[in-house]
Length: 126
Image (cartoon, rainbow, N blue to C red; front, side):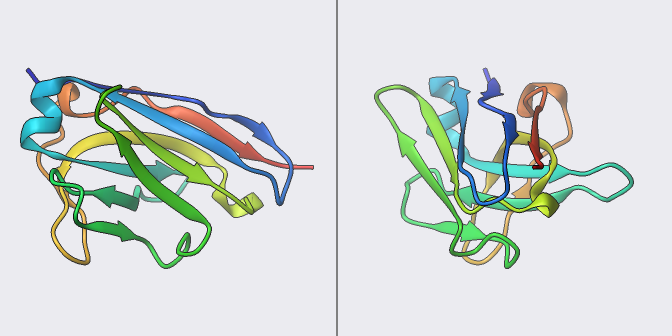
């Protein structure tokens, strides 16, 4: 059964770092990649990063390239999003989701609740 749940948001000053975690079921990791999305108030949801099921492909949006790093710990069934040099424009609710992660893009599988976490708030402010 597909299940993901994110954690790790918070308040951080500009230039600071946060690490988000996405705990996933073994079934999820066996069949899907994991993607990170964010949505700021009044803005559309943005695909931030993803890692493929086999760990051989990663994708980053231009807005976070060089600052964010996605990784997987298979033993812990967890995917991480390390966010460095955070900027006020990174402020948003961040969601992880079961996705397909082919070269160069994130493919949303479905909007069904089981495939998406509940979201975690990241606020970058001094």
